[in-house]
Length: 117
Image (cartoon, rainbow, N blue to C red; front, side, top):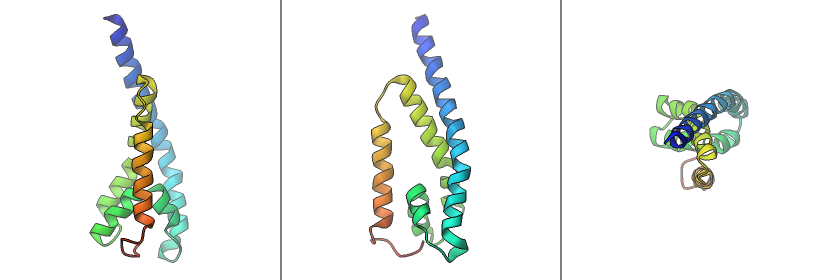
């Protein structure tokens, strides 16, 4: 029984470490996306690569609104939590996370959606 508590504690710790690392990554990623966007006069390539879910949501909203921004702010901490939990629990769902991100990137570049952003 003590071993299962130890595994649970390591899994929780890994999850929170991942959230912390994801939070640290969020700032530079947002800065890179903003700089790439050039205040609306640049390219949204970096934003599409780093924040594909926010870009897809902005297509539904018609602009980069509060929901898309919220998803962007939460994306990397959630990625970190999932990866941290996966690493400590020895579950291989990182592949699924990477696949979901890649599919969202491909859809955002596919041309199926309007040109904004």
